[in-house]
Amino acid sequence: MEIKRDFYLQELLQSRHNGMIKVITGLRRSGKSYLLFNLFADALVHEGVADNHIIKINLEDRRNSELRDPDNLLHHIDSLLVDDQMYYILLDEVQMVREFEDVLNSYLSVKNADVYVTGSNAKFLSKDIITEFRGRGWGVHVHPLSFEEYMSVHSTSDMMRALMDYMQYGGLPKVALMQDENEKKTYLQDLLLHTYLRDIKERNGILLDSDLEELIDVIASNIGSLTNPLKIQNTFKSVKQSSITQDTIKKYLDYMQDAFLIEKAVRYDIKGRKYIDTPAKYYFEDLGLRNARLNFRQIEQTHLMENLIYNELRLRGYSVDVGQVTMYIRNEEGKTERKQLEVDFVCNKGYDRVYIQSALNLDGDSKEEQELASLKHINDNFQKVVIVGGMQPTYRNNDGILVLNIFDFLQNKVAI
Image (tube, rainbow, N blue to C red; front, side):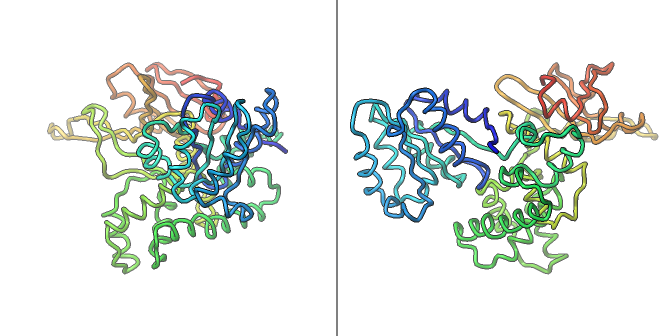
């Protein structure tokens, strides 16, 4: 069964012939290779591009090990460019090639070569593309399946059950096609241990890996909670009797972000209009991997839903921060007290901004007042939204705040 990735496919098709190297990055096993070698290549053929003008090279394949040498790869590609028609060069896991920047730069001046590459290392995108390609790299970041993509291969009328499965096992394409729950659990646990963690250890030369694994457990157990390296260091010292330093913790967190396992959301003072770098929140790019790390024992819907909403917002192209609203109130003694309220997400895209709260439910007036308090104290005209779980219908309340059902949000039925 084929999973459609129309959002990314259209992004690739629209970027053709733009004079840049198209760089597809993302979490391992998120579907980058399938997008490039199958969906994109098929779309090209459907438009009339000849097969011999689509050059596909999987550099992770041992049979192509000789092509990991930059000169061999360059000569091989050159030998296939036999006329003046446009050639589409598709290279999978190009970071396995030494000096790959020079190889790719060599085709920036070839008028009939349009280059597309995948890579699994975040620094491959953020550092090398900007520095080595002199602003001529075009990034496309592929996330695990969105809920809408996930539902395209799950024909069920029980939307709530489908959402629970999605939050438990995540959106890696192979997992989405599995039927057996034990098979999903085993696959995710093996993938995390033998692929992602091994990548991080080998790439960064980590020898004492117990602290890294403990740190992943801490982050997985505290998604949606504010933390920082010093706070984590103190936890390690008091609970684990570990001497790991906050500097090492910061490095390990950076490594996890480089591997696309987690993302960091920093705090933003809405009224002060300034960023507060610490503490911050961390979210997992795939919830199935997060749950697998904890042996599927901590399935708290409140935190999982918050992580899910964060991922969906990032997929839609928003930069997402954690909001803070400062207010002053008078206590019972008549003294003024400073109080800080949290806004789960401050979402920006171009000139657009939206403030979002995640609430599993709004049962009772006190619960609703608690969830809406921070939004009510934001004195600007950008849209304010509370995304709620369950089957509560979408509506706009008397304060102009949109109360948005989670399914309407995930299926993009109501624009925000």
